[in-house]
Every structure is written in C-alpha cells, then in structure tokens.
Length: 124
Image (cartoon, rainbow, N blue to C red; front, side):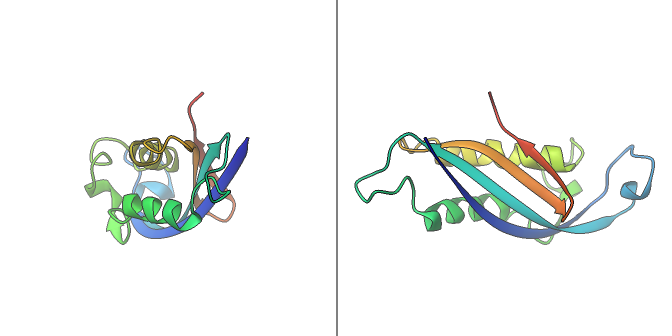
C-alpha cells in the first residue's frame, strides 16, 4: 500500500460560538492542510497520482475558505468553524473529487491551526 501526502495553506478568520474563552472572539489563523491518499497500485507512469494534480484538487476545495470569515461560509454558518469541523468539511469535499479516481482513495485530512495544534478526520 502506498500513502501520499500534499500540504497547502490558507488564511482566514473565525470565532467559536458558545466557547467561553479567547476563541469566542474574532481571530485568525494561517491554516495548514495536509491531505493523505492511499493506493494499492501504481499507474502506467509508476505513480499513484500526480502530486500536482492532488494539490490542485485540494486548492480547488480550500479556495472558498482563503481570506474569508469562516462563520459566514456554509456549513460554518450552522456548525462551529473548529479545526475538527474544517478537517471533516475538507475531507467530504475532496472525497467527491478524489475517490472518482479508481487508483487512489482519500484516507485523511489534517488541519493545523497553529504549529502545535491540529485535527485529523478520516473514515474507518
């Protein structure tokens, strides 16, 4: 089994509704997003998927978050824009694009809100 990862970034502001502490106030992050895919075999070029293509698909998903106020972007108008919910949203959005390729499957998305704090979403 092969596992590949690409990393990209976006910047945005958010506030956690109902949270008691600093994070309930408007603040921003320079988010790091890591996308992991797996493949049981390589294609005719001896690669699972082109890293450039994987990063392009990832950027297509996160462009709507970049330099935005997450609380005003669906589904974060209804759910808290926590690292956990952002990771799941990126995963769900990418799954539709990546899992159409029969050679690779999306395995996990990790979203970092700082150098020391991240959340990962994956399905069993």
